[in-house]
Amino acid sequence: MNKLHVLSSLMATLLLVAGCSLAPTYEKPDVGAPSAYKETPQKTLDASEAGTWKTAQPSEEMMRGEWWTIFDDAALNDLEKQAQDANQNLKAAAARVKEARAINQTARAGLFPTLDAGFGPTREKLSPASQFLPADGNVPAQTLWRAQASASYEVDLFGRVADSVRAANADTQQSEALFRSVQLALQADVAQNYFNLRELDAETDVFTRTVQLREEALKLVQRRYTEGDISELDVARAKSELATARSDAMTVQRLRAASEHSLAVLLGKAPSEFSVAANPLKPVTVRVPPGLPSALLERRPDIASAERAMAAANSRIGVAKAAFFPSLTLTGSGGFESATLGDLFKWSSRTFLLGPFAGTALNIPIFDGGRRKGNLANARAVYEEDVASYRQQVLVAFREVEDNLSDLRILEDQTATQDDAVKASVRAAQLSRTQYTEGAVNYLDVIDAERTVLQTQRASVQLRGTQAVSTVNLIRALGGGWGDAQPTPVPEPSLAQK
Image 1 (cartoon, rainbow, N blue to C red):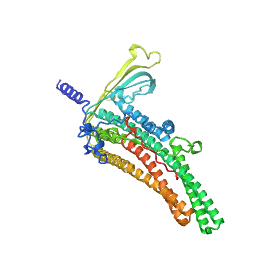
Image 2 (cartoon, rainbow, N blue to C red; image 1 turned 180 degrees about the vertical axis):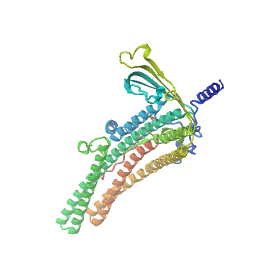
Image 3 (cartoon, rainbow, N blue to C red; image 1 turned 135 degrees about the horizontal axis):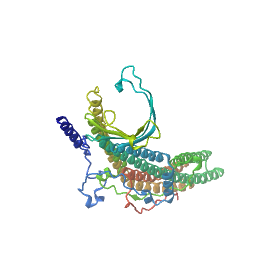
Image 4 (cartoon, rainbow, N blue to C red; image 1 turned 30 degrees about the vertical axis):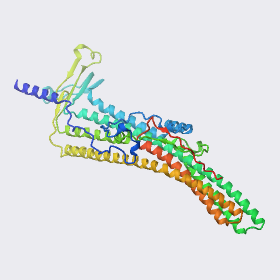
């Protein structure tokens, strides 16, 4: 009776601790986020945001929306849709999400009992000793037909199964966040490649006008040489400048072809099946509000992925700890058993099996050469690594936002300054050509002036392209777009030589 009481008390205690997790209490590490971005002008900060702070909660599942539509470019909108439908990297990321969900389903199966059923004959011969017969006794072989079901269930002592499920849930959420990260990267890459293509189209347009002017200048020089006003040296110089402009234009065409091929791959197409009509870049006037640094921790899918990796590693510490404690598995089987198939399903053929081979099995670990200790140390080290990776990812995210904010702030002034340089160089070229026609300056002055015009115009176009790409980079660094980003009207500068 005492033994039964002790056994009952032990079972009650084990069932009481069932489901209790041994994992450390999970808390997100402090990353020391600032209250505002350094590169955001104070005058642009909303008064309601000043001094505001909140604990970041992962919200990578929040829909980002079609942020690229704020650029108001129908061609870009169409390219983004094509990439969403056919990009192979995105499909691979989606498949990884399915893999994680399948593994999660496997882990969750540990919360439920397993049921099996079987049917078939067994041919067996029992030993005389097992039947309490003399050693020379003869026990005939027999065929037994069985139709039975078996059940097995692991009582979740010390939360091993529950922690495994929590880790699998976090892994699934991490995979989903990585998918969002790949998706955002794809959207940004398509926009960047598109604007790069448009920038090269604008450069081509500049070279087209430059070549036309070089041809007109060559005609003028040849006419003056025919009339005997100048030497052949000026003609040679004019031909050299024309050939150089044409060669540089071919370089831009080569770069454009490569950019178009890259864009085709992003869309999941072979380069031979894809082409984009030329369309020079227009100034991108979108102003993206950066918000608060605390919001960045919520919006960036890569940060959310790193945070979920920490949560999974924390739960696996509990799994490793639970291995030091007993495990309890309840099993049993029952059904029908008979010597003939015809008697198999009679009520008198019913049978069940409980005992040492199938029943309650309480396993207590004693010695394993340090395997469990090593597993626990590994689980803790993995968690520490994930914490460091998370903090590093946050720092990189802050840096990327600051970089792009500073780029856009400086580029706004730089493009305006460059526009002034274009106007001044165009005016200088006009004056030098006029003075050359009048014989006041030599042709080298004209060449220098026209080279300056070409350089300033190309620099202006490239700055516009950099501004567009930096805007996309800022949206990407912030984890996606807001719905309140609006284009600010900015007059488009004229790059044409007059």
